Image 1 (cartoon, one colour):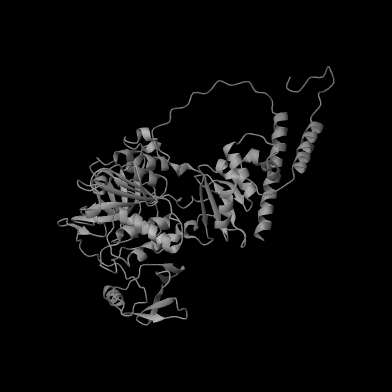
Image 2: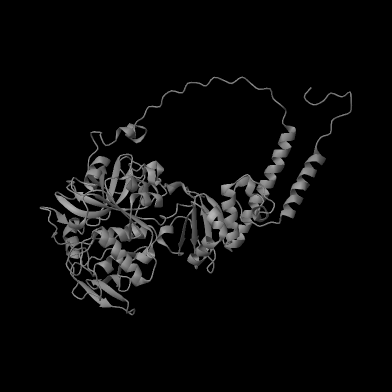
Length: 289
Length: 259
């Protein structure tokens, strides 16, 4: 019975309708709207309990397809490529080389030595040998700079244009994202301010090395990451966050003047010395004797 | 409100740290020096009996040569129980379509756009549909030319990518290790999704410890084709044809923030 009902529902008629937004067409099934097609974006969205989500358009043959509608998966035609019995899904083997190797970098054909150089792999002397994965650029353990929020792209460009980035940002994987980017969903990255992007510097495991809105703090974090035990009075990292050297960059966002911190530490030392038990007069047994 | 909370938490951290310093200082003052004690011999721990040996420690036995290692259709969990390298979200899925000009497949651009989406290349969103307004079928020079043309029309810079055609899968392996999702050739006849030979490009989402996971753009988006490494390599670059690898060099999604 349920199976029959499911089949009946599945074969219900689909119709396209208009919406208030000229950029969208609504998809209806049995008098109920089940999705929308965004014309400019060429996206189909369906309504779920979580709201509108991207989905595969269920319509096989829309009677009134929206303009520029690219239909649901069609079984690609069998290949005209001369390969008996082979079904072709879009790879034209007739124009592919069958020997040697082909490299291109961003659309420009290059030789293997250059390709390996791009990958930071090997020099030209060993380019003819088999590629050793251990010598290729393996950046999966690189630190990550993630800028999220309004204007993140501009801030990242500013950071990367800074003269310090060339030195401190070497090997750091940097990317900017909009606040609602799906790549960040459920990962703990948030734009703390609606108007300013937030900077995250993390290690490859996601441990935060710096979080804030100030590029200076980022460069401090990068400097600390690179050289954790060098004490620099002229460095802003100490002034920004004196406990960084104890607990690591990003431990606290609180900015407290170094004078205050020195005062507190001095008070603690004086307090300990003052409360320290003085040794008794000569002749009396000492503690632990 | 959130900012105030952050400041409060920070103040708490500072007070905690200062208290810790005081306690440590006092403790250092008061702790008597204790003579070193001879180390106690470690009691021999009884070996723990494994109820489910396949889940703990014996995974090395499950390599490609193991009798049970075979091509199969599965979900997004690798057969060896490890975590999949590329956990591509279902709602971002794209299916292969036919060119609107000649009906030929668009598997190359479909796979390339999915990989670009994974790397956050928003500017390439729509390149598959753009290419579908032209004759289908793709080969290396055409791919390079179409990416260039698309970027020129959109007035954007060509993103950095490597296109490799050959028989050395190292680039593919390292790309997946780095978290990037490549697009690769696949010649089918796997017995689970394709009975016969095909000319196709798909996205590998796992290449580790002898297993390769394939994210196809022709069939069920929730399924992955799992192949032992050697079986995959035979289908990536088969007897007559070189293997394809397309890798966008922009970084993959960042890791989950560790609390």
